[in-house]
Structures are given as C-alpha cells and as structure tokens.
Length: 451
Ligand SMILES: *Cc1c(COP(=O)(O)O)cnc(C)c1O
Image 1 (cartoon, rainbow, N blue to C red):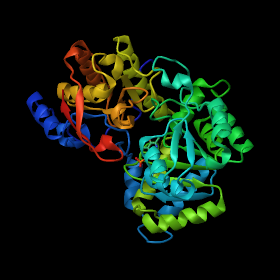
Image 2: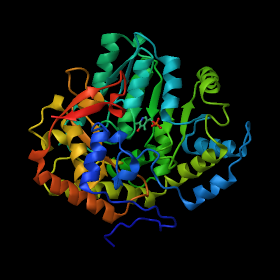
Image 3: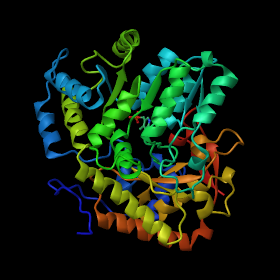
Image 4: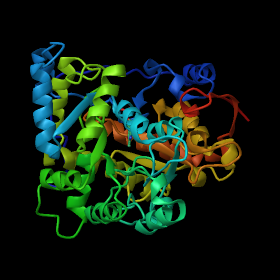
C-alpha cells in the first residue's frame, strides 16, 4: 500500500469554525498584526506551534484519571521516573512544568556574565534564558543549515570546526557547556546525526566540558537517523534514542513536543552535585522534586506519552505528513527550507515576498496574509524573532508547525491550497513596522502597523 494512514481512529472531536475575511481583518487589526494576540476561536487551522497542541491517546486520558495527587512520593512520579530512566538511561530525572523551566534552572547554575554557550541553533526560550543569565548564546550550525536549498540529510549538525575555533578563540574557561538541539527547531526542524553528536561529544571531552541535549524532539530526530544515517536502518528507534542520550551529560526536554502531552518538561542530569543544586532551585520555583510544578495526572500522561512517541508507525505517519506538505509546496514552486523538517514546514518568506526588505519583516507579513486569506495561523521565525535593532536575522522563515495527531490529510490539503493561492497574489502582501515591543522575546507581544 502506498498511502500512509493516520495510525489511529478518532474518539473525541472538537469543532473548528470558519470566519469571514472581514472578521479576520478586524481580528488582525485588534491584535496589532501579531497572531499571538489573535483569539484561537478566530483561527481555523492552527499551525502556530506543535508545542502542547497534540492530541492525547485514550491510554493517556486513562492515566489522567489514575494520577496520584500526593504531594510527595506520588505513584505517578515513580511511573514517570521509571519510563524516563528506561528511555534515556539517566538516573536523575527532574520534572518541570515545561522546557523553559528546565532551561532557567540549568542556566542559573552554569550561565552568568562573561560565559558563552554554543548550540547548533538556540531555540528562542533557550537563547532568552542564556542571555537572561548574562551569558552569550552562539549558534554554530553547519553552513548548509543556513542555506534553505541545501539538501544535506543532517542540516541540524553543529559544525565541529566552528566549535574548536570557539574554544581556541574565547578560551574553554568561558564555555560552561555545549548544547545541541535535536531536532534543530530554529534551523528548520532539521535532524542531527549520531556521527555529529559523537564528534561534538569528543570535542567536549577534549576540553573537559559537559555536553547537553535540548532533546525536545528526540524521537523525531532518532527516526531521521534511522532513515538517513548509514548503518542505522535496521535498528529500533528506541535503541537510537538511547545512543543519543548515552552521549550526553544532561538534557532539557519540553514534554509538550515528543512527550505527547499538553504541559510538562524534564531536566536530566548525570552529575550528582549539579543535581543537588538543580533540585534546590526546582523546589524554590517549580515545586517538590516528585512533582516539579505539575499535577500527578500530568506525570502519568507524560509517562505514557514518552512511550507512545517511540512507536514506529506513529513516527512514520508523523514525519510523512510533514514531508507531504513540504514536497507539494516545492512542486508548486514555493521555496521551503529543504528537505522538510520533522515537526514543521518552513516557508522561505524572503523568496515568497522578494518585494519586502528584511527590516519590513517579510515573514511577519506572510503570516498575516495567510491568516487573512484562509484563517491559518503560522509563526514568523525571522527578523521579528531574532533580529536586533537594525540587524536582520540570518533567514526570513514562516513556520507551519504540525500539531501531533490533530489534523487529517484534508486539513493539510486545505493548507496547501491556501498557500498556493496566496503565492499567486503575493505582490499584494505589504511589509510591517513595529509600533510597540518588549525588551525580550518580542515576537510574543510586539504590535505592528501595515506599511
Ligand atoms: C519548545 C522548545 C523549548 C521550550 O520548551 P517550552 O515547553 O515551550 O518551555 C526549548 N527548546 C526547543 C528546541 C523547543 O522546541
């Protein structure tokens, strides 16, 4: 059979509502042309993020009822801990309310003024937490990772030469750890190879530095390794996942991605002294170490989700549905970051809107146009998110993130049609000007005016 089907049937449905163009125009204006400020009820297909937007399984919902809400030592915590130990091989498993809480604790421990943190590409909250500590966040992805047209199979790889150069230039003392994000979200959802992880780990070893994973999409990354890396095809995804974690000294995870839950995070640590200090910070701002800012039922749903995400029929469907959208857009002459990523398709807004200069935010303009045209919500990953003053970002992208187990193929076909229609009238899309912005993470709350 050629058709790859959704490997589930639907037990609960949630209606979605089409709006008129006038309603969407008014919603956009009220939101200051920032779709983060649009009410979700006014969105037809929501591709803003794949974070916490997935559908839970019947077994996860059953877990919600089984959740043990004891303050300390809850059964649900031990089930969660056992599952994470089994999957990752780590002994110290700290639950947090989401990925950025793990990041905040980690960088409070190792960050600070004068420090430099390398990553393939920092995710926005990771960068913000590094910078909030006073440290500098550096992106050292391979050059292919900055070229939307490159078909490198592992465009998320961190460049070992750039890392060596960093150690030589700034000195190892200033680098508290090296981080690699799998898959590389800000760089197009592109995977990192096992070979690259081993090489980075070797360099970390040479300089005696801890190696950390930002492991939000560890299962999707492992699936790409299985499909693309020589010698990996016959191995199970679970075995590859274990290899990835075995290389690391620690990891931050947002369970809202490959944990298949709506809220939750994890911090994994090997070092006992660091674990002790992290637990103290956890108690200060998240909660007691056996619940970490979550309810027992959340831990139960995470324990189940981290297991289901390793099912290979699920991953086959997951990666294929993203690839389907990406390849059809390319066939229609619309440039995306090639090849399609694991959780999202990234439109190249610079080539979609060549008439809009970077500092008039072509990505943000395209996001607004797509919402106005078809009620689809995407997100800008370009100069609004990563520009600084009059320095634009390296790429102007629009991310169409696909929530897990939520939309069917006809939803995806609708998205395709809408983008292809919009592409035909793209010269009508207008640039934007920022009229109001906060000091950090401005893409969440900035307001704009159309030019
Ligand atoms: C989502 C994400 C985070 C942050 O996790 P939250 O749960 O949103 O706080 C960090 N890194 C990457 C790569 C992510 O995708």
